[in-house]
Amino acid sequence: MNWDAIGAIAEAAGAVGVIASLIYVGISIRHSAEVVRGQSLQKFIDARIASLDKLSAPGNVEIYHRGRESYKDLTTAEKERFTALVGPYLAVSEFGISAYERGLIKRGTFESSKRDITRQFEFPGVHEWWAEERSIFADDFQEFVDELVGPPAA
Image (tube, rainbow, N blue to C red; front, side):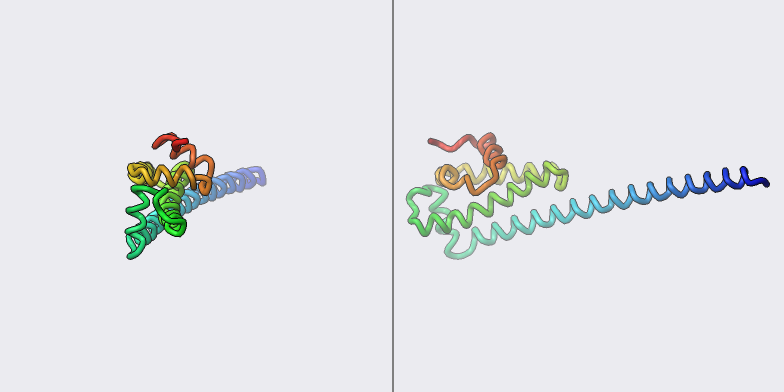
């Protein structure tokens, strides 16, 4: 065997090694992406549960129900509590929509977020609240909500 043959064998072995390394990296990246998607879904679920717990807590439920009917009839302190209840609840939906757009959660979870938003806006008080407090959300989320449920009344 001459040096040219040994060189060709070494080149072939090196090429096989590079291909094997690229396959391994591809599998690792795919696995990491799946882990991130799973973590995103878990964060979404945990945040949703926390928001629902907060909404249903004693003392909050009454303000939440009255505020949904008429935000403008709440006292200043009650409006702040209502914002502290509804704001985070909608922020969870904003997270769900953003995570879906980045491919981190599945379409069903995205659709669930849209239904949550729509369900909140079935009440006139939430529309009143949105007209006053929407600026606490990102501009793109404001546009998304306006397209989904209609812009706030002037």
